[in-house]
Length: 169
Image (cartoon, rainbow, N blue to C red; front, side, top):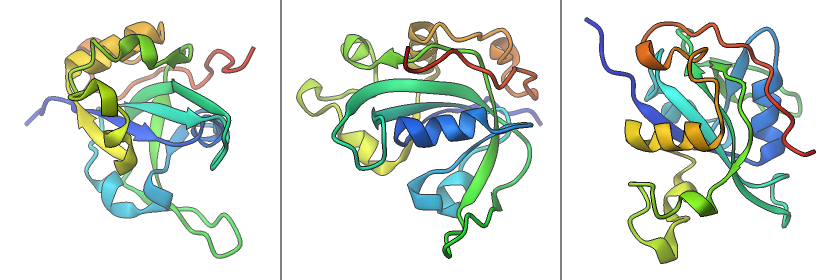
């Protein structure tokens, strides 16, 4: 039984999101300080875009941009020992080539923005589901290689390259 892929926004600083995007041989994602439960909501073939409020974690260097986009891979959530007692859960993601895209020009077009004045509220959850239409708008703004993402058959494993264009030029 094939199910329709869902679309998600994950939230992390740009440096953290890009660390996952640039990991080889396949990229990964972590959300909500490495918690497992949010990652279990995702299925292989789901599409995820990372939104970065800032360039660095806890930084005042506002970025407010989508920085990576990709397709969740079949491997279940797993742990990685990062040292110092931090053992977060991760999920493999095959990232597509894409450019960063600021959210500001998209705010009036995105369905999940219910209140323009408080548009950032949902991002506090760290991971939330959005419509396919919204994901397509984000992918278009990022000039994402949606063909390599398997956009027309998102439930299949994606063979997209993990290299993306530079975030800061």
